[in-house]
Length: 298
Image (cartoon, rainbow, N blue to C red; front, side, top):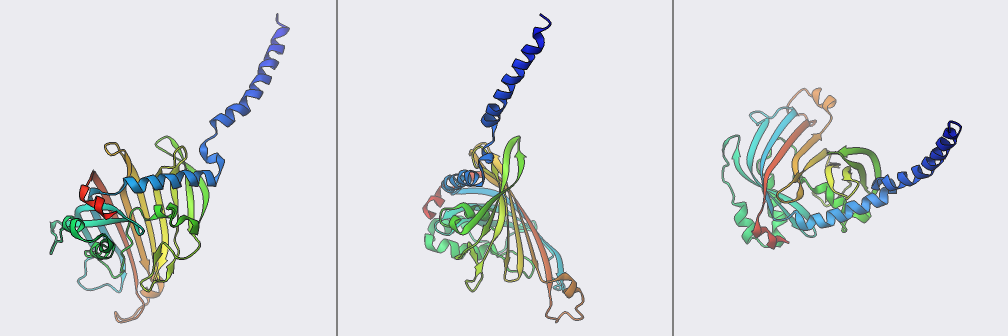
C-alpha cells in the first residue's frame, strides 16, 4: 500500500500538468488577446456611448486657479469658483459638447446670465456648437485663451469618423474596482485632426484610456496637445451612475501652460514680450438626469 503512494502522486502530478495549460487558457483575461481586441471592445463601447450620453444634464462645481502668472495682471482674479448646470450633448459630426449654464460666480449670482435651456430648445442645431463654445469661455480667468475643455474629448479617438487617423497600443494593466483594466494609448497621426488651431492648422493629440478588459468600458482618460504654444492636459474620471446605468464624468481636470518660466522670470518690465502662465482647473459633476429637449440636437 505504501509503495503505491509515489505512483499515485506521480499520476496526479501528470494530470495537474495537463490541466494547468487548459485552466490558463480559460482564465486568460481579454486583454491577453492583444491591442486590436481591446481596441475593438473600446470602439464598440464608444459607439454605444454616443447614443447614451446625450440629453443629459448634471450639477457642476468648477474651480479655476491661476497658479503662476508672469508678469502678474494688476487687479485680475487669480482664482474663481462657479456653480451651475452642465449639459452633455452629441452633435454629429463635431462630437460631444459640455455646455455650462453658470448660476453663480464666486458665490454671487452670475451677471448677465443666459438661459442655456432656452437656447438649446430654440437654436438651430447647426449653430449650437459655434455659439455655445464661446459661451463656455465667458467666465474664464487668466490670459490663456481656451475653449476645448470637453470632458469626453479623448473618447473621440475611438469614434468611427476619427479612429483611422490614430495609432493605438496597450500599456500597463490596472484594476478598477476589482475589475481587470488596461491603459490603451492613442496618438493622432494624420490630418484633419480632432482639434484645430484658430487659423485651421492641424493640432495632433495623444493620450491614453483606461479600458475595462471584459467589456471595453472606459473609466479614465488623459489627453495632451500643444495649441498655439499652449501645453494642454485634460484628465477625466468616470463613475458608474446606478440610476442611469452609465459611466459618467465625475471629475474633470485641466492644466494649461504657456511660455517658459525661467525666461519670463528674468523680465525687467511688465511691458516685456516674454510671458509665462500656468492655469489649473477642476470640475466636479453630480446629480445626473436626462433632459428631453436636447434630443433635437442630434
